[in-house]
Image 1 (cartoon, rainbow, N blue to C red):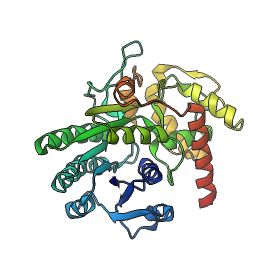
Image 2: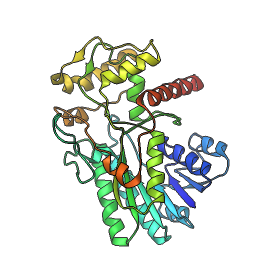
Image 3: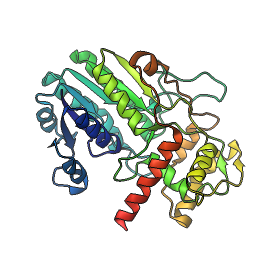
Image 4: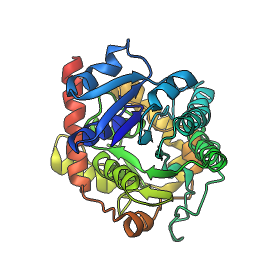
Length: 338
């Protein structure tokens, strides 16, 4: 099978390239610029992978990258919660990028497109409510990234329908695990926790954890099977921050446990604590005021039942293993850049 992965230098994209190559598929890795060693060095080191430029704002590059492809994995995105002024960039990458990629795929007669969306397109729920599933769409679009992923996937479904393109979407949770060269916002949260950002109190909130290896498995199953629609790829349980910290402390006793459980009414103040920790401890920032407001009184609560029943997907990586591998990769990257 001839495959294309856009966003091949990202956390998911890189792991997807490796898995496809190891499974014996021919892999074309799309990156924004072949002239940027930071985006190409690891991919070149893999061997057996064709690198191409696939800038989402260049329809000609996307069309050339799609030539001769059987299955295209569109994983390119701009993932950011806290950097000011990036809202339009994030939106354009998701909405215009998805449409450009799908039109290029249709023109090249690509057999199937697997588009990476996100569980942020599903609504948060009240603590006692049933879980969200793939039939649901969030209506709270105040967070630029949430708006971008939601509108991007909706546009993708409209365009795929217009073009008669065979497409499925995978909705991962917050992706952890090995294989990243630089932090994502999800990894930033883990690094901040490891540096003591929640030493004085763990928020009464949970985290939509999933390991990158399980997300790759969901993409491969969606590509290989005769299926349609949306598939949430997320752990069976979305753990609390306290349970994650307890696991991280067991892995590395130097990681401090929280002194208390922070009351839920303080959730709106979490971005302030995030900024203070960044200034005082040098921890990465990972929480915006918009996201904190959206989560007020709500939790991550997503069902993975459809992926299990339709794709035969299962969570195979435990939270402990995912956190262990994430922490090891953070340390390795830190030492490499020291």
